[in-house]
Length: 147
Image: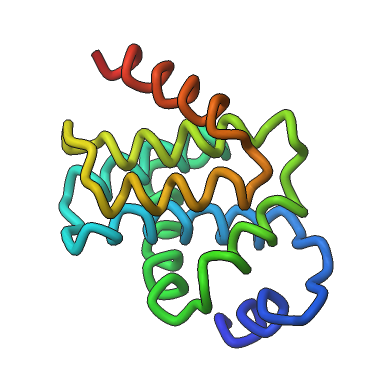
């Protein structure tokens, strides 16, 4: 299952991913950012599940299954650049700010801004075509929501 997906993802010029593949790529990116600090705790997993359920109108069980698939994919996946390119190609610019917000939700799930997570998000935002200022505004919106 993942072999075909990874093959499409690592192609020199990958085709635009269909929605289910883009959803999986985004879920894997959420997992990657959560794991980037060397700690992947239940709060982060629960946050990813809630993000996926909200974003794609999934049941809690479907969101958990998608996250579990994403965990496996993330462990096998190539570099982050290919993930972000696949997402950037599949998600219109207007929606990419919500992707950044979702990533910030995961980073801030434990109430801390870890340096590894922060650094990965600073790399990912421009790769998705989102400017630093827009990423900072996305972080501020998430912080306001999380209180």
